Image 1: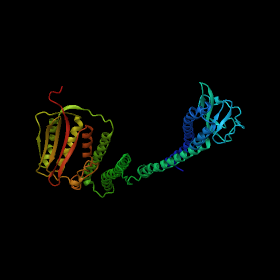
Image 2: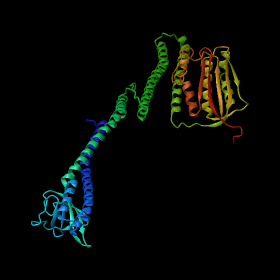
Image 3: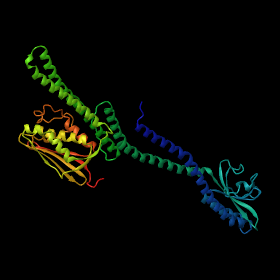
Length: 473
């Protein structure tokens, strides 16, 4: 059976209560008894000293009669609830507040020794085997003419002190029980604020571990537990999204590979079985060649995209004139633009505009963006390529007056193999990887690329590059 955190916490709570009662029953009990014993001894010693200096001293100095002193001791006996003796150093009891005066039949305490206190003023025991129960006995010397004539001894049974200690101990037990009951509030808060949310999070992680990345849960809390739950839920949603994208990626790549392969296979089989006559071979071989070129382009772009995603990709950075690169790239599309009567208008800042980047990869970015702009532009239209400076950045814009991108597709155009519904009729040979490659290249330079598009009006792509100052050495 798995031990839950709640069970451990509850066990710790019970252990705390158990040892709390043991501590009260042992340490608190002994300390309470010792405290009450010392307190009682101090109180009795003050009374014994007072008696020794007054009544007992008068008795030994023949200034008070035995009966009068006995009357006083009886009254103090009732007040103190203790037995008061006046005893000689030899052990003979002169007066006993608990017994009548008997001069002819004196009581002698055998083996009486006032030094039994060992430097203290009280002792605990049977007082030289005189009492049958444990007794607290306090000594106060009676002095006369600088000589100890006798002692005032006050006896109090330890049973009374223990009774008082037990009463206080019962209060300690009650306080401990109240404290344990109050501490259950902590247990309640632990259950509601830690254990239940943690159990939900644990169940969610089990679901995610089992592959159910679409499992949803919520923890209503604004503390670390709520943050952990939100982070875990977000992580699962991102993994689920990644899995969905992976499935979509496999489906798209399978479709894009299957279509040209099906065409190639169909045409070749038709040639072999005579469905296509020999005089038509050249036409269909060109079609097969175009399909193989499409497969080659798709494979190369996949390999390139994989290399771009590799961590720690090295860029061959260099300073170069972005304006000149734009001019060269635009010149490469001159033939295609003439066929569609498209004009490429260059609006460049200055004759030279130096940036720091990987020239080969930035040229590929320009090529892909310009190729898309031409592909989706109408005949007799204009494509504008513009460079501007902004602080330490160069902004490059490629803008067309083409079919535009639907609003709900703007966030998806960077996904691999994604094609908008408007582009499917025009982009027969497109792989859906061009813009993914563009974004990967720009991000690898720690730069940004954005798109502004209105359906039926046109599209503008803007990316940034690190500018090199004119006085840069």
